[in-house]
Image (cartoon, rainbow, N blue to C red; front, side, top):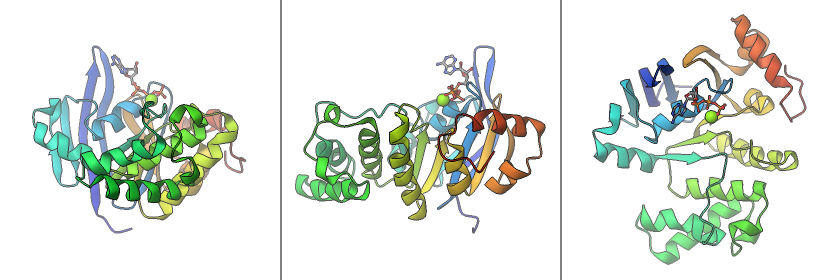
Length: 258
Ligand SMILES: Nc1ncnc2c1ncn2[C@@H]1O[C@H](COP(=O)(O)OP(=O)(O)OP(=O)(O)O)[C@@H](O)[C@H]1O
Ligand SMILES: [Mg+2]
């Protein structure tokens, strides 16, 4: 893959009181790359990806998204808004608007953010709902859908922003096991379509199959990173091996992996 970074992070630091949550993170993500972030609970994964769309502030270091620098402590709000328009986010809890239909949830961003007419926005939304295989539920409300269906709507809603990068924070962790596969399938299709993705997940099968690069975070630092074959089959650090072994048991996809 050619070097064409859309996210560039250098020496990122963040503290919560005495806790050094991000301890000098360096990470670049190229256009079209899929990076899976692994790490134990509390290692700083959510904090890191939330910094990338400005949901969290950081104290020092550099964070550049699509050529725009997000400064520490958000003292450049103009860039914050621009960056948020380029970086979509999918959360563990789908965060759909309960009072809007599925179609309205997805049509909102094209109208409000991209300035499309209501009719155009609806056409875009229907196309995206088809893309996540849920068009037949367009007129329903989120509460009428299963968790897996709601998460696919949430992915369509993020895509409706026409983001250049999509961030996922444990998108399948809140789902019943039988619904995990349908969401991972959609994410796999997105990855194949060339979307740039940063994915925090414990789904090791997905990481191995879909990631271009796997990054292991340990206590706010990148302990090891590399292509999945290297990380899973020939990790350099004993701690990587231990982590992958202990998390393999949480994997719900057929493990030929750990
Ligand atoms: N608002 C906050 N105030 C104080 N400490 C926080 C806050 N948010 C996170 N932390 C701490 O920062 C550290 C990293 O949290 P973070 O949520 O980034 O971890 P994580 O790797 O995403 O964990 P998990 O796998 O459980 O989601 C943890 O020690 C957490 O307790
Ligand atoms: Mg987290």
